[in-house]
Length: 471
Ligand SMILES: Cc1cc2nc3c(=O)[nH]c(=O)nc-3n(C[C@H](O)[C@H](O)[C@H](O)COP(=O)(O)OP(=O)(O)OC[C@H]3O[C@@H](n4cnc5c(N)ncnc54)[C@H](O)[C@@H]3O)c2cc1C
Image (cartoon, rainbow, N blue to C red):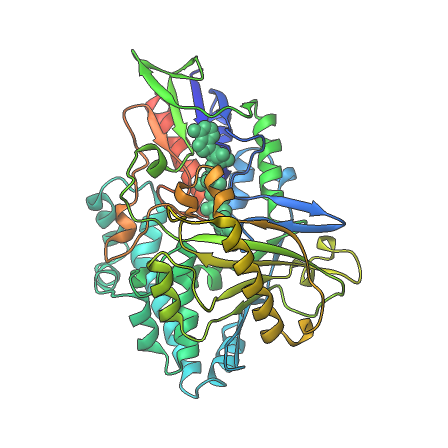
């Protein structure tokens, strides 16, 4: 039995801690704040349940496999698959209903432009190729070297590898497939899943569109924070010692490491590596502002709605320049549409999120939050007819300052900014000095609930191998 310290109790850290304990190691998890879960969590106020971070979940098999490997299937919340994945509303009053069912989605696309029904099919066919060429090899194993990745990609077929290499930006891919700007904007949105700009991020991010369509968009009954609650219960049951309120660092001493004045044989770091490696000059992904509203009536709004801005390119130019956008694209999550446990009868809770730049040195976040709240209210009233004239009570909000307090560098949600052709491959590595491994959204394979779980699983495997376990 070896002693392992896990620094940080986000989903990646919890996963790594639980997996290492299941492999027979003695694991201590240090969390700087007084709560586990990091960016993911649930808030319960006046009968309403709000997720405070992630609301969209895909790749359910990764989540199921993780709970199964922790011997904790009983602790996993029930997942509900959404037939209407997202309702996109545009500034000119038009809409696109992205059903999981491709025929229904194509019908909605064709209503925007006659050629775009077929465009949607060809886009998803390309997205699938991208997933096979780049996504699968990227997600199958820890990314250690470009050569190793290329070898895995080549095993999926040279043709798919070449497809991957020919990719330009996500925006260019959208323009290739769609006549209507509405659907180009739909494609571009997938870059924001990695906190990036579609005008600078590689078209490889189209793999996210494929992942959503192939594996579904899911809600966890009772809120996605239930995944954190399940993981916390699981790791405790596996015997992980949890120390809250302990901001920790690791220091090499002889053949072991000292963390919080205790000795360990290996360390898994769930903090963003950019924060630790002091790569202060590295470009960062976007941050987010979230407002949670109590609505005094049960809305007919679907689970996920996107209210697009009228000029996406301008919005990203402003965000990339470090400014709040004049006109915001707004994500509205209305979980009671799927799950009545999220709000009492006759009421709805709305989680509303917008992208904002990482904190700039001169930012005054109290002021920014009020500006954003006003903009969000005005967009909701203007673009969702059933909200017109309805008083929305702000129940809680989360700003980049809150994210920064949880170790996110300048509040950036996904850490390293993966712009450019090889952007995704320049992420901070999972392997630090011998005996130190990184897990979480800041390292491979990236942010998002299933990916950080994968990261935790990879880090646990690498740590165990380092400690002499069987691969
Ligand atoms: C507003 C918002 C919306 C999102 N929406 C989605 C979504 O819809 N779908 C999706 O899949 N993902 C979404 N995400 C992303 C997802 O939440 C994250 O990628 C994921 O939760 C990050 O997990 P992690 O393992 O990297 O740890 P983090 O959540 O980053 O947690 C790291 C933990 O480490 C602790 N820590 C840091 N430094 C130290 C230290 N020195 N000592 C001790 N403890 C330390 C921190 O306090 C924190 O608890 C969203 C995130 C946000 C903020």
